[in-house]
Length: 383
Image (tube, rainbow, N blue to C red; front, side, top):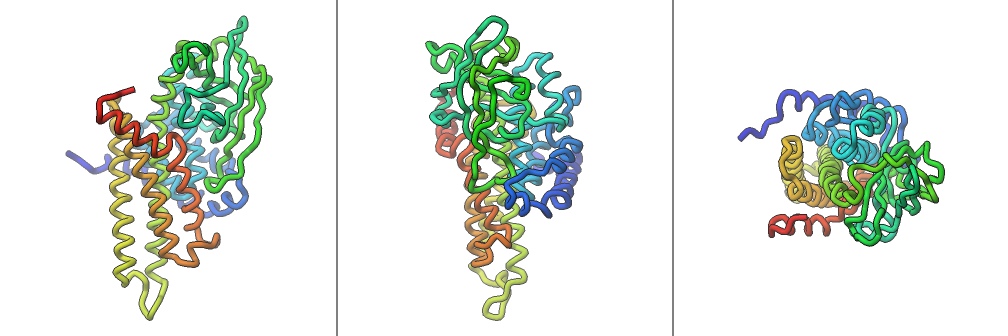
C-alpha cells in the first residue's frame, strides 16, 4: 500500500500551489469585497488546464485524472474558495455529464470550449422547491417539432451569471415521476427565451456568481437532450457523486488556509510575555485541526482514486464531502477563536474563510443528505 503521490501528481500539486499563491491569494480579499471574479485569473487557469483537468485532450482538457483534479482544486480554494467553486463547476457539474453522457457531437461542441477555458459552464438543477429533493422540480421541457420548449426557473446556480453553456434538468414526462426527468446541454447565448434573473448577495464565496436562470418558452434543438429521454435523474445522481469530490477539495483548501494562517499568527502574537504557540491550549487546537485536515485529505484522495479507476465511489465521495466540509467549518471557527478580535475583522482573511466554509456543508447535497447516501450504501440500499 503506497500513500505517496506520484511524481506527476507532486508536480501538478506544486504547480497549482505556486499559481494560487502568486496569482490568486494576493487579490482574494479584493475579489471577496467586490463580489466579482477575475476574468484574467480564469483565463490563466484555462491555459494551465485547470478548467478541464480530467477531460481528454481531444476535447480541450488536460487529460489528467481525478486525483490531480482534487489536488489542484484544493490549492486554488486555499487561496480563494469563490474562484475554486467556479473551477469545480466547470470540471464536475458541467464537464463530467457532458463527457459521461454526451454524444460525440455534443462533446466536440459543448465540452471543448469549457474544458479549454474559453467559456464557462453551469448546472441548472436546483429550484425554489427542488433542492435536496430534485425529483420535485417543476421546470418542463415539451417536445415541439424539431425543438424542446423549456419553461421554468432555476435557483442558486453557480456560474449562472457568466456561463455560456448549461446542463439543464427538466421534466419531460410528468406521469413518470423522477423517471420522467431529462437533461439537456444548452448554448444559453443562442437560446431565445432565456434570461439571467437575480444574482444573489451571499454570505461567502463572493468571488463566484450565484444566479437565477429563467426560461420562458425557450426553444432548444431536439438534439440538445443528453442521453435518452427520462435518464436525467440517474445522470444527475452520478454527476453529483463526482461533484462532491470537488466540494470536498474546496472545503479542504479552506481548512488548510485556516491552519496556515493560525500557525503564522500564533508564532508572532504575544500574550502574558509569551507567543501563543507556547500555550498548550493553543497547541491542542492546532493539533486537532491538523489531524482532521489530514484525515479529510485521505478521504478525498481515496474517492478521487476510485473515480479515476472507474470503481464505485458514491459512498466515498459522500464521506469525503461530509467530513471535509465539517472540518472546514470547525477549522474556521477555531481559527477565528485563535486570532481573537483580529479573526473577526476583514483585515485578516480568517473571517472570509469562516463565511466561505459554511456553504460546503450545504451545496451539492447537504451533509444530512450525505449521511443518507452513506447509510444507504452500508445498508445495501443502493440507488
